[in-house]
Image (cartoon, helix red, strand yellow):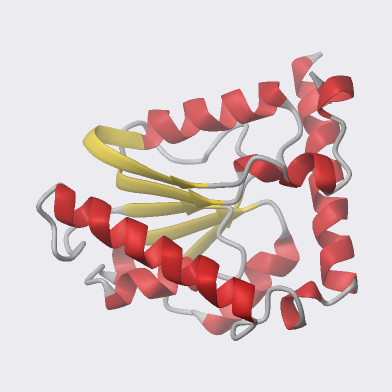
Length: 181
C-alpha cells in the first residue's frame, strides 16, 4: 500500500516539474539573474558557509557528497569551487530530463536516477548529504519520512546533512497532503 502511494506522489511531482519545464520557469522565475533567485542563492551560500565555519571547515575537500534532488547539477558544480573533488560528488534526481541537463553541463560528475524511497548507495557512504527544496516538493508525509531515513542511512557517522527548504511549495504546486497522508 505504501509503495503504491509513494509511486502516485512521485508521478505527481514529476508532472509538476514537467509543467514548470513546459512553462519555462527556469528562464523566468528561476533564471540565474532574477532578483529573488539571486537572493535565495546568496542566502544558501551564506548559511552553508556559516555552518562549515561553525564545524571548523574552510573548504570541503576530502568529502564524499550526495546532493538529493540535484536538478541540473548546479549545487554540485558549486561544491567544486568549495574544494570538493569532482570524483567524490554524486547527484540524484527523479527526472531524466534534469539528469540529462546535468550530464550535459557537467560530464565529469556522476548523476543517478532515484526516487528517494531507496537511494542506490551503501550505508554510511557520504560525509555530506544535501537537499535544496526537495521536501517542500513532496506533499506526502510518508514519502518525506522515507527520503529522510534514506538520507540518514547513507550518511557516515560524524557526517552532515544540509537541509534547505520551504514550508509551502508542495501544496502550492498541486499537492494535496491531506489526501496523500
